[in-house]
Length: 281
Length: 264
Image (spheres, rainbow over the protein chains, first blue to last red):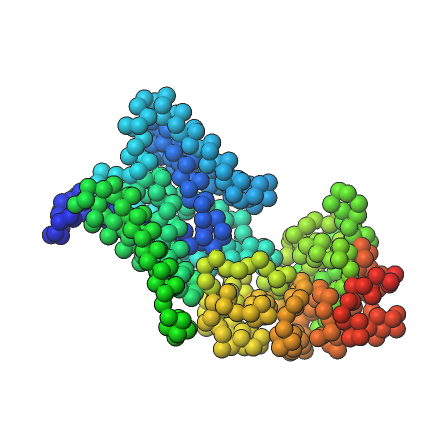
């Protein structure tokens, strides 16, 4: 256990500080993976995998296993399944996604309703509850963060090549299959880690929205990645700050802030004088 | 190349060491009529070979088979002396795809795109070293994009974008460069740059080049051999020999495929 740090309201309590750490981690790591998904034109894949994770939650509730484990297993299988369908061109990316998406949510609903109270049991997973995150939960998110950062250091450049130009990468001899599967596995990991924090229905938004904002102003992939991470962290901080005094759902508030930042950036870009944009070159 | 002769490379043709790419008796079909029949094609080191043919003549399919993206129906392919799937030093094959549908969703600079061309030299998980960066800058300079290296690709003209993809292939310092319709619709300045950089690659580095294109006027004077494909190879010889058959790369530049219809 770590003591409570002297931070003012709304982060004065230990649980609020744990919530802050957990939400900041989501804000940082989700867009890091998300940038590659957006570049791959699979912005919605996170949502699809999240729905499969929901089936895992239902299965966990049904058989009495900690739902995070079953969600992780389901999400991994779903993520790799979507990728395999796409790579073998058995189905277009979005169709493969739709299949997993609907079957996932249906399985989750059926399993959870068999297990007992559908709403009560599944709500914390669907919408998240950062104030319920334990230190173990924070440590888990931290460990995942280390995996994400190390993976990016090792494979970030090659992943960039693969998501930018898959056919070329194959001819160039890059292990396209392995790298695609690794990205899918990382996506599943981030979704399951973020599931209890901002919720199954909203975690994928944190992979995409900060990237969408960053790519409006950034001029390189690396720059987009860094800016997206910063925007993600700011969204988490602001969202959580307004959530408690206004008694709002934290996950929803964070995503709402991320969306508002996108709107602000888009508007600023439209209204900024062209001369200013040229100067930024 | 240092490759041990394997079972499929045993029955060898002349110039084994020099041939970077070789197809022999190659046939292919997608299940409804043949696309390639008994195709023979060789690209040696220091050689500039142009592959032309009317639309639907099987050029794209042939490239896919040559690069190992499709298995040959029958016959043999040797890429750097091996079956394409067994080629270890794949980075020695540079590839410029047909103008990719690659309008980057996320901004990516010329330098970022070209750097990908160095990934395979020492292993994709390693960072770029000083010599990698040098090769990247050299490649960008050689296609005349030096001042635009830090610019995002989607702010460049089509011709400049295509030059960036050519630079990506150059960055790997390939022994064999395969280009699929790289200059279709590209401006004259880009075409001239393109020609100069290919000449540099062939003369200074001894690379072999296989260019698939309808627009050969810009490179007509440096092409060693023209291969005309119409399901099978109907012509394989120098531009002069092709001219003797009534088709000139310069004079008939506007509708080369049409003129090629009458060959073979």
